[in-house]
Image 1 (tube, rainbow, N blue to C red):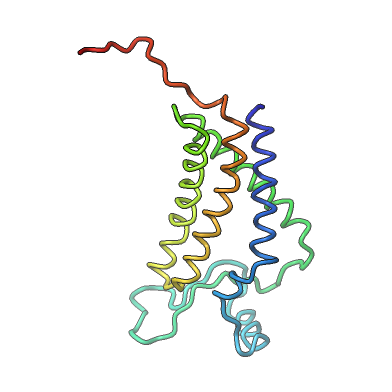
Image 2 (cartoon, rainbow, N blue to C red):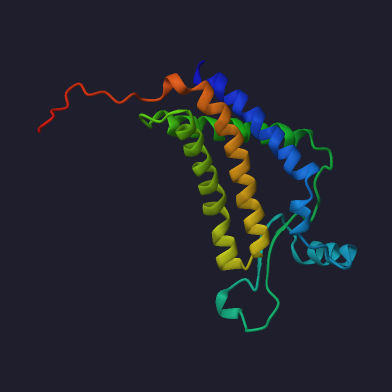
Length: 185
């Protein structure tokens, strides 16, 4: 099977897992909090964040005082379309690109059996989750349970994808050969 077909199937696995993880399992909601007065907070954001983007409170480190409220917010003062069609299409495209990248990485390995390839892809998943969320925990105080759930979610997604990738691209991985290798003994 070619890498593109494998990437499409893998993207479908990632997409389905994402739907289960976010829409069926309660764990993402369990590590998030709800504002006590959403309308008041929404109004404050709209008044103080005139353009969409990331905002820091305080904005500069030198303005930060011990015990002072701090925030890291992605503000969308104009809101967004509650219909998910556009986001679902974009998510699938992102999953497809991610799958192609991981398949290319796996294709550079040599001598891994099926479970070795699965483990390689799962390790990439842990790396994705940890590398992308650890800095938010460290620098912006994201809650540890949030980061743990996000890393585990990535591990599960890529472990499932690894089961598929390892089966479909097994013949595409580099083979270890002894040609040209001199053995001394």
